[in-house]
Length: 237
Ligand SMILES: Nc1ncnc2c1ncn2[C@@H]1O[C@H](COP(=O)(O)OP(=O)(O)OP(=O)(O)O)[C@@H](O)[C@H]1O
Ligand SMILES: [Mg+2]
Image (cartoon, rainbow, N blue to C red; front, side, top):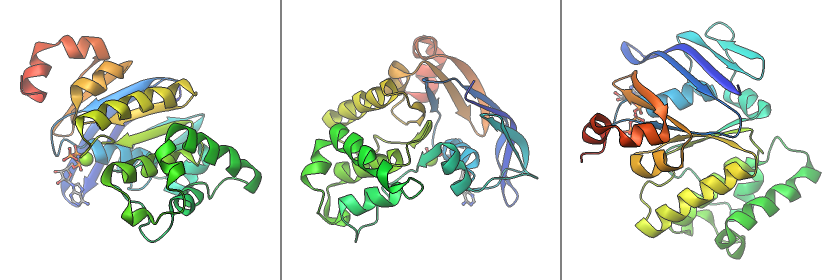
């Protein structure tokens, strides 16, 4: 197992955002996390990434035990191979495409960066064409590609993607799901949060359904896709 979260709880002040969450991620899997707005999906990813503190529970990753008492900050998690590409397109608008990628590779040695650029530019040729363009002037879809490319520059073992298809056209959304599979086939494990539940479950080995901070269902992507209550509760069909 690559990552295990056990009985994770996270609060924002008095708001108990996620409750006793247990999840498992195996190497080379795509694991989808679905649920409606405010369910706690982003909170769970941020807790695992160390960008917000857990109040209790444990994250076990490659033999590292991370708890509320022995917390690791986000930069430590990145060094250990867990990178979160957060919701929204947080690129550095006044840096070029290439310099944004360089920032993503800050933990890498100089000689390793070249392979990182190559990988990102092969996955996203559009970024290669625009390598000297200011990131703030890219289209929304291009900024999303850049945000993912930047996360890949740290060469993560576990890449957590928070709503990668948000705001993309149907065509680009389809392309994004193809790229996510391509990234996994290169050996990167993926924990994927998506509103687009049908597409996410279609490419996922397994999935979890989160409802107001609780995991209410888990199963293979196929099982969840076939489950009528999921279809009606979360997908509105
Ligand atoms: N920084 C914060 N301070 C206080 N409450 C927060 C904060 N961030 C999130 N919350 C609350 O925690 C709950 C879970 O939010 P979260 O962003 O994890 O949901 P989500 O499943 O990612 O939703 P969405 O699909 O809309 O992105 C929500 O009720 C939200 O209002
Ligand atoms: Mg969210």
